Image (tube, rainbow, N blue to C red; front, side, top):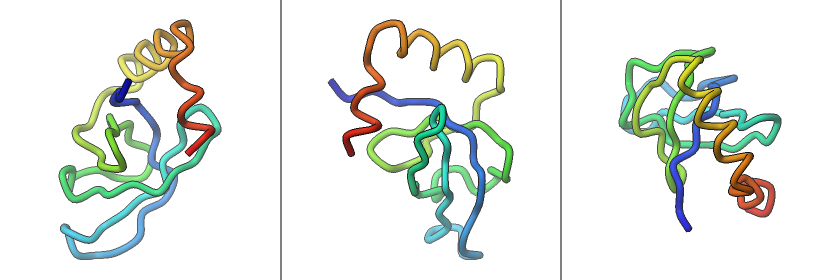
Length: 82
């Protein structure tokens, strides 16, 4: 199953909006993702990520809630296997 997962941006690379990327932490698992769809995103922001693209910003409370639900469902194993 493909799910969009919340994560926190820990660093950003690039100045061009279309090629900007960020390192995003998903509960300790860090992945490189495209920030092209969220040009307003900054370090420390939470974003919803699907197949390597941050789709939208989300507040910390909502991000934590979604991450906890996914963890309960056992759906976070895919993050560690990629």
